[in-house]
Structure formats: structure tokens, C-alpha cells
Amino acid sequence: MLTQKAEQEILNRVTINIMGDEYNVMGRESPEYITQLVQSIELKIESIQQAHGDAKLSKTQLAILVALQFADEMVKLRIEHENLE
Image (cartoon, rainbow, N blue to C red; front, side, top):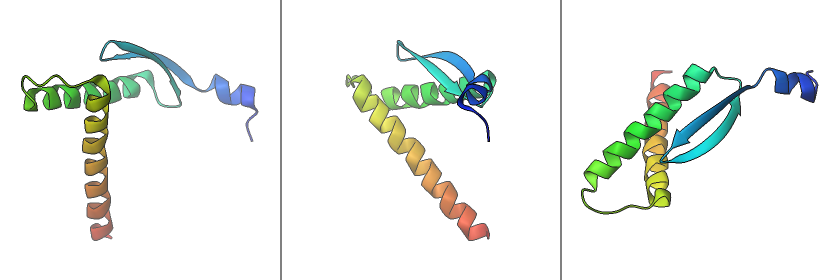
């Protein structure tokens, strides 16, 4: 079992920017992987903004709509995976 110090040493620290807000993220995944996640989020945000046209959505509204889209994809993939078994 790793000590807390050893666990912290294997965590990658990455600073990301989403919708103008900066976040410091720690995780075991590579910085490149975390960057891919950010790019996926940004694409969803752009897609939602385009779909809503001139409507001004708040950051909170955008975050909720992005979360709903990712949750939808996850549930559909889970169902598809279960059907393959």
C-alpha cells in the first residue's frame, strides 16, 4: 500500500482552462490524456452554443448540458457493452 506521500508523487498536475476559468487538475493520467479530455469538453461546449444560436447560456447551464451529453453517451455505451456480453 502506498503512503500518502508516495501517492502524491505519482499524480500528474496539469493546469487547464475551460471557458476562461483555470483549474489545477491532479490525476494518474498523462497530461496529454487530460488535454484530450479538455478538448472533448470544449467541442461539446461549442456544439451546444451553436445549437442554441443567439441564446446566451451561462457557464452553469453549459456545464449541465455538457454533463447531460456525456452522461447520455456513457449510458448508451454501457447498454451497448452489456448487449455484447
